Amino acid sequence: MSYIVIENVTKTIKNNLILDNINLLLEKNKIYGFVGINGSGKTMLFRAIAGLIGYDNGSVKVDGTEIKNGVHPKKTGLLIENADLWMELTAMENMKILNRLSTNTISDEKIEEILTYFGLDPKSKKPYKAFSLGMKQKLRISQAFMGEPELIILDEPTNALDENSIIKLREYIIDKKKKGATILLASHSRTEIELLCDEIIFMDEGKITKLEKVVK
Image (cartoon, rainbow, N blue to C red):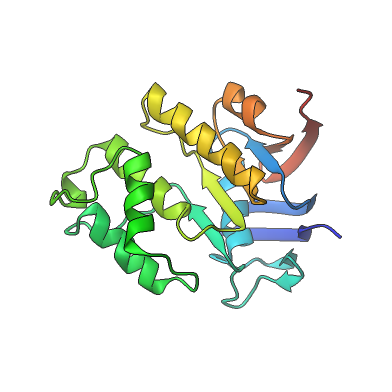
């Protein structure tokens, strides 16, 4: 049985067809890379899988649960483009609020470990609004991995990251797969996709145009 089952999903926004009859079966404990130009439908598909948007037709199921009408997949970590956090709060304060909102809470010590791993100081008093673009991205990444999620959705996670941070992220993703997570990754970097992913899903104009297994 496939972990994620997407059948005939269509989404229209202001008469624009954003997702065009998407059909996809994704297995558990694999890394899937999504490739396509801006506007190809990657982010909208991720939003549909995460339960952040509805769709006009079809169905999305994650681990047997249909994702619709406010239902979200359990134990999911999410990094979606253009998603912001609380501007006046520090990295640690942001993470603590998100942790309290989670159904799978972790200790403050674990939060500090994640922040430190990605190069952020959990003791810093600097508010999020004063962060550089790279620091903001590191915090968004940190919250996506919080609580040992079983499904991790990462939309362009390497944006604004330096090379060292990209390497650390890559290692973290591989470690999560080893621990059983399923990871959906969208990236403009074909190199990044081929290094990490088991299968590549190509999208264009809201359609899946090709599936390609990665030979390693």
